[in-house]
Length: 481
Image 1: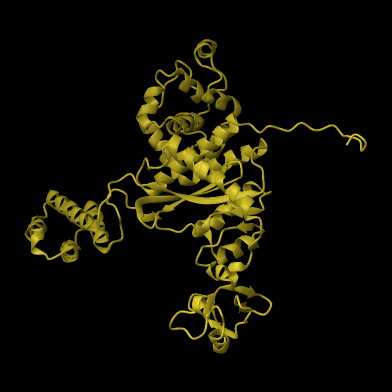
Image 2: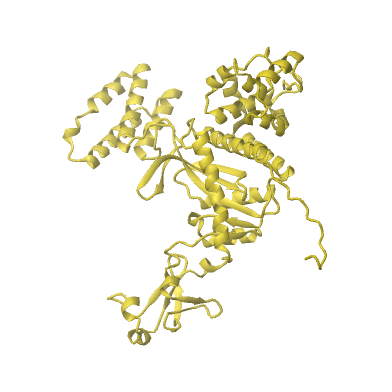
């Protein structure tokens, strides 16, 4: 049954808290400024209205999770702090005699809510910011950042070996002696193989033979370990402890194992939409959904700004169809012809070279664009021949995609200044709230961590940085002006 939070402290609690809790502390100001009643509204459907014992109030449990992100605490640590920290008890709404929930209660509460409930809680925080007049402006800023997985980094050979050894130990525990003996006999020293490729191929073959030998076993633990061994041999997983994590690249020479957090925020840095994906997924797949959610929470949004990772003609068209003007820089490869002096004439559908010559025709390219070819006579007599043509070319053939130049408004300098707000949001989440590395294992658990982190950041901005209203100027006459 749903337990409700009491609205007022007792007389003794009021005296104690008023004496020992500083009212200018950020947590005290957040409790005074922010209404956490939306937590009870969003979680009421998870409890029966009549049956069962009264639970801990969901708003109290949510504030305990808030404190974990705020101070970088674990479930056990935050429960221990609430035992003697009066500031934390005041923030969570617990009196001096109230019982503190244990760590397992927080684990069950977090699992019961799940990722979808935390998505709704983030939306409710954004709606409260809009009602307070702090979610304003016409910009939507999109970006993604890496989050390292909470697991050890292993290469492919170690994954295959450890998964097979884990299956072997489980078989020995269940009395499968024949399979274990076959596994032990199959172990050979690494010096028997000429190189890493041959050694990896041999390890894969051993794992496949062991999986095939145990194909008739119906025990749940054995079946799970068998599928894990098969997936490791097939290269479908990157970690044995976190099966959802994947390899991604921050830069070409900086690989990492983990996830990628995609967010949408306004020009003041308030995060309105969050999505978490494995590290090997592109930013463009989440851009339209994030922009739509941000526009739903702030209908005044009209512009979308992002970095070069979101560059693509299809995304520009989709954003324009939703009445959002995209400000996305073009990659250097896509803008190479413009730097060389070529111009595209949309009315005649042709390319114009730096010498003023017009392309003769075009044909469809395999990259979903067009190849434009020029006259051989014009190219051989052109003064730009040495810099424009390669040694094997007799005439210029240029690839161009006309859709790249569509939906490209002006004003990129101001848009890039607005885009910096998302970098400050990431810096705050990673430096002060430890979002650079996952606290949990599994995609949905890490997604809850990311959502909670940005909920904390949004509430801090709402309570500690209120919007200053400009005073209205007195009307002036034309003579005074």
